[in-house]
Every structure is written in structure tokens, then in C-alpha cells.
Image (cartoon, rainbow, N blue to C red; front, side, top):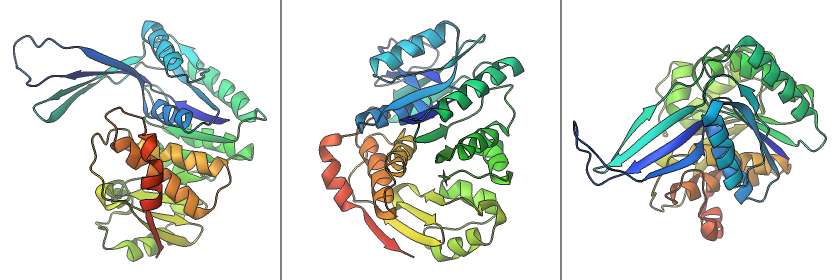
Length: 313
């Protein structure tokens, strides 16, 4: 079983209209899904045929609605209840653009966080838990080092843990003594961490820089995504350049989460480097080829998987 964590889930609501009229009425037909990066990961893992259990924090009537949507998506779940209402995030697709309205989410009390951490440790300790993914932002009231502490719980249980976050939460995880199995910053984020301005043409220099930075020591997989330029990955001293087949994207939202799902799928199966990289990047590409977020065009799996080019740096 792969355990996915979403600490700040949302009801993702999309409105698709031809033209947004400002300061007037726009009538819409909404599409509502159980959102949050970890739940996108969960949906893809279900498509891949993995046993999944989603956890995190859910609150109020919005939380009940989210649980119902998870049931619709056939995502097994075991969330910790909180008093605050889970958030709603709105995306308006109009005039060839996407305008988003993102609620920050509820504040979480120390008691609620402690209850979740106890529940999380119990889930990680289960014999059938093979791998853990931790994705997205932390809600208000949750300390920045919370993910770092969760990583330590998983590592102590002897299981791989994939961390996909940014900002203070990633900084705290990199500063901790116990490191995750995999992190997946994009090129902008890694340049921000290093204080550099590397481009896809500077990958050997990036490899040297990462190898000399103590914050990344002890992290088996560091994957740097580069959008249309593919990715570069570093695994225990070896560097890989990943180039994707040239297939037009329809909706790239959720591709990073889908990539994490593919990595988790392969790492949980103890796959080799080539399979891990192909599986993760194939999932990201197949999501971008589908208008739904966190959903793969599975009938084109073989085409994309076989079209991924991986070379060693």
C-alpha cells in the first residue's frame, strides 16, 4: 500500500467559459473534484493499480464533501478531522487563460496536529504500508518543520518517503538530520535554493553544485523538473538527463503530482533507475495530455514510456 498525505486539501472547482465579463454576471457549470497535490497523486496511483490510502486533515461540511468525492474516485481514505472548514479553490478557464482563486485553508490547532501525527505514525507502521508520499503546502498553524518530523517517522519505520513541497517546509526538511528518499523541485526552485541561475544547458555544473551542498547529502533521489525541457535526476552519485517525446500538452496542471505518483509506484516496487525515471516522467506527460487534473491517458502509455530518452551525465 502507498500512503499519500494531503495536509491542506481543497474542493477544486473549475468554471469553463468563453469570455469572462468583469463587473457583471457570468453563468457557469462547475466541475468539482477532491483537490490538493496528495489527492492528485492518489488518483493516479489508483489508475496505476496500486493499493492506496489517502490521509491528512479534513474539516467541516467541506471536508465531508471532499470525502464523498474521494469515494467517487475510489480512493480509500483515513483523514484526521479538524474543526475548521476545508478550503475551496476556484479556477476560471476563459479567453485562453486560467484565473485562479485559492483559499488559504483552515487554521489547525496544536491538539489537532498532535492527533494527526499519532494517526500518521500508526498508518506508517502498518505492515502493508510500502511507501509514503507527502505533497503540497502546510495549513495555517502547522510549523514548517512538520514534514521533516513526518519524514523521520517514515525513515525510522524503514520505508521510502517522497517529499514534494517548497518554501519553508522544504528548507526545514533539507536542514533536518533525517532526509527523504526523493525530492522533486523544479529548476526555478533549485536555483532559488542554491542562489544560482542554471539553465538546461548547465546540467553537469548543477550536478557538481548539488554534490557539494550538504543540504542534499543523504537524499537518494534529487529530481529537478524543467517543464518542456524534461528533467534531470541525481541518484546516489549518478546523474541522468531525461528528455520527453514531443507530444502536445492539453492541461499541465497536476503533472508534477502525477510524476510523484509514477516515482512512488516504481520505488515501492524496488525498480531500477531507468524504470523509476521512465515511470515518473511518463505519468507526468500522460497527465498533461488529458484535460482532467491527476488523470492519465492510459491508452498511450506504451507510446510515451517507450519514447522517454534517458542518458547518463
